[in-house]
Image 1 (cartoon, rainbow, N blue to C red):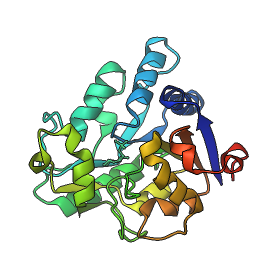
Image 2: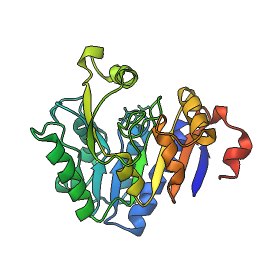
Image 3: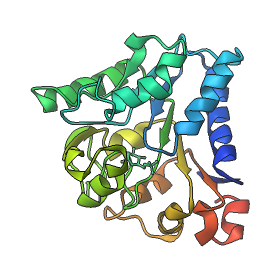
Image 4: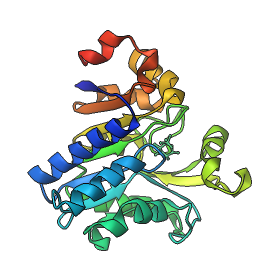
Length: 251
Ligand SMILES: N[C@@H]1[C@@H](O)[C@H](O)[C@@H](COP(=O)(O)O)O[C@@H]1O
């Protein structure tokens, strides 16, 4: 079932997304959370930190798995996703470092590292709630267009468009890694619940394609319509290409 929730702006979207995680942790303190990076979830993390400071939630029993990580960036590199997570969330909360997982982008044996990551997820009981964003080309995690839907955790060569979109975080385009490790589309689909966040007018065309377009490997996010429990939270800008009836009633 796909449910669409409308936020009036990015702030409300972030609060709504945080509330979903707060509810999950209240019902299941040892929940396994799938986390994402990028600009979109930044304020959701701020809202979660606030909720933690107000003692509304604790992460003491929780476990987290991130979707992806660049290849060859050290966790201390401020452009690595390990650093992003530490900076935006982990250092502010009571999540045990032993329970905070990201793919290993620095392994000498990347395939073995991908398998080990999957085993950790399995051992934790699978992901209860996976937060995802969407790239301008429809990628989820770092699963670029034409990634097979059955793909599991793997090393990817990043699209030029993705490297350009993410260059804003780096000194220049050349500094953007060419490869990343990402959970596969299959792993994302195996999570018990999916929460897709879409913010801003620059994402209106991708959201429009996701909602009205066909399921195709050319547009990786299109697969999520097959997931049994997916919620899209989108703000007004992102929703600007949709007919109102399509998001007020859900689908
Ligand atoms: N690998 C990440 C994705 O996990 C993220 O969801 C997406 C959108 O990012 P943003 O939220 O900055 O638009 O692109 C990045 O490249």
